Image (cartoon, rainbow, N blue to C red; front, side, top):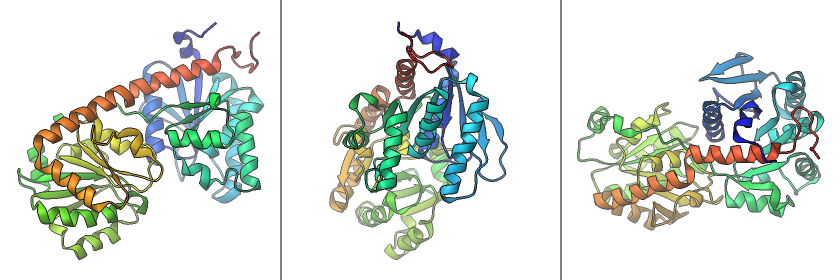
Length: 399
């Protein structure tokens, strides 16, 4: 008999990941959003993570319980100590949860072993196709052993892109155990609450400026060096253009030096890391994501959710093409195709109606395919599927 949806409210879920709040990144932000939406729906979810520095062992953040286990500092010993400490915590708390929801493959290995020992159902979400390559699954003996362990102990794999799904099936994971669930974004945050003119004035811009915004870590994979080269050509042809770079990272100093060498410092503003990204989206006309490698970008989803037209690189991992339909709700540009990148920017900056039309379709795309509400529904359906016929605390299938 199928589980009734209200029965999930008695289901305990442990989200397992090595890094979590206050450490932030793409998959941590996704896990936090999903967990908070599940809590709002009455699902008993909590996070089990690794301690980093002098953080409280137990904390409640925005209603979400977070438990941190101590590990050795680095290397293989850190991974083994993470396994041991997580197992000990779950053993002591085994009657309070039914399902382990692991984020990324290392936590999937840990979750699978613990789930097998304690009789718990396990799902593992993979967030990037190259994670499989980086871990060496199928490439050497240790990687093959890890892969065999994952295949034997994880009940469902969640792939956020078609490329990840394909990589898993090529490694021998049965297609029936791979589920496509994209990243999601809430639709409640609205840039309309901000005064665009006032924000532009704070940045030293007049009302007639045309603003292009990037949001993300300043690392080589994000393609900011390419963006600056393209921007030099755009500004030459559209003097009102202003590039806003929101974020920080190890490449910032080199990027600022490159900006000065190109002679475009008057048309580029670095504002560093910002907690409130929507404030800067409020002054944006076009959003850009020139990533060379990307999963499914939170920043891209956030921009499209606000009805902004987007230009994204057709990156090596295929994350951007999972979201943006070229010429419909944004533009996909081939990596290194600086001419098309510049032309797409100039076309959008010069045509307000085109910006509105593309932005409207971008918002519809998010509402229909990537809203957090829809994504949470998909996870709850998956939880039901995993727990159907599975005795609470027993781990044996019912007759």
